[in-house]
Structures are given as C-alpha cells and as structure tokens.
Length: 105
Image 1 (tube, helix red, strand yellow):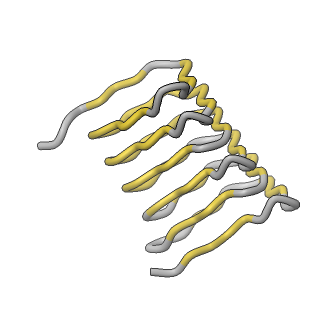
Image 2: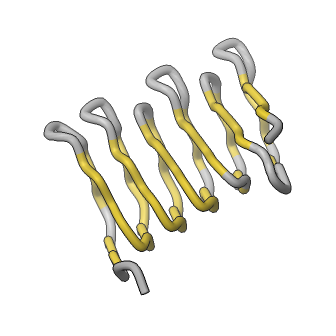
C-alpha cells in the first residue's frame, strides 16, 4: 500500500485522492480527501470532506467525515457530520456536529 505525506509547510487547495493508499496530513488541506486510510496528525488540518475505510484524527477537521473505523485522539478538534461503523474517542476529543454510528453488519 502506498503512502502519501502532506508535510507541515504545505497547504493544498483542492481535492486529494489516493485510490488504494494512505494519506497522512501534517499540513493543511482545503478540499476533500479520499483514500484507503487517512491520518490527520496533530499539526494537520482539513477543511472539507474525509472519506476512507479508516480515519484517525489528532489535529483539526471541519466538514463531513465518512468511514468504517474512526479514531479521535484526545487532541482532535472536529466540526463535522460524522458517519462511521465504529468510533473510538479518547478523553479530551472535541466533536461538534451530528454523529451517526451504524455498527458492524
């Protein structure tokens, strides 16, 4: 599986898509991100939709979030409508928006 890293000094305005790999965001993305796995690091921020099988948020996200497995670290700040099959939230995580956890079928 290929891995793409958006470094801290990088700002991307536009959509980011990886058909089968992972995207690690240390910088800023203004647009939608879709991949197999998405990690928004502590220094990272996304203003747009996130779509992946597995998403981990340690930094900031604003928009929509759709995945199978979602992990929100204690440092995460999320303003989003969330749809996930399973969600793990550490104490201290901030979430503002509608949250829908569908469970595993």
